[in-house]
Image (cartoon, rainbow, N blue to C red; front, top):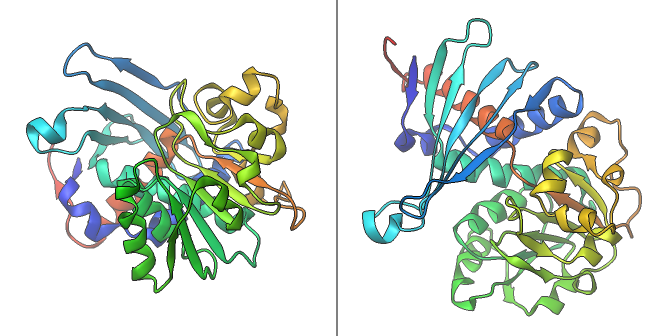
Length: 321
């Protein structure tokens, strides 16, 4: 069995490797070569923690496994640890034997950012120049760094419920040599691409905040009840997602579908665009939206890539099991 500790992940897996792994697994899902298992998520009745499992099997990449972990809201204050904790377990699909254990915390951030980057590359207008960020927490930095590599952006604008966090976005913009401007939500009409990355349970970005031709990547909604954007925006947009079943139950589309404002059949997998079986964006005036709910196969894809790199570079820890 191979062990890749959390502390080694950052030196092994970069944005390019993450992007390739996520693009490939989205394509496999749309082709019917990979599928996710039902998600388990429970409040354990201790430490206010939410704990669960996401897993799946990618026949194309021969990757089988699960991510176990969740959210411990008191970790940072009480234990000096980040609140999100997870570990990925990979198994040999031919025998069922355990293959690897991989630290999952940084992987989760990288695969989430890679998913929005894939959507921007395949759905945003080629001439996109302004990128808007709704949300400025820790994950927003990962999102913006990856997104800036997908188009020749000239400016970054941002909004956050707590404006004192906006320097997180400004820091990344400065790294890229781009100007940054803090705006109110109506100011998002200037953006050609918008990423929402919040933990909101009430919509903030509404349809009248979004100009024609914009691509919106909604990356924060992964739980029943969460909502980042208005149903009016979902209704207006051509919507793509990682997995339709998850999108309509715990993703951004849950509210629009339950209210009858959007039909489930109108929501398509981003993998169809990658594979060329769906045309994707069809005009410069079309609003496209990606509902990134975060599926187990994403975690398995990046974990598998890390294991390969760790073995190649002699960093992998091998133990008898």
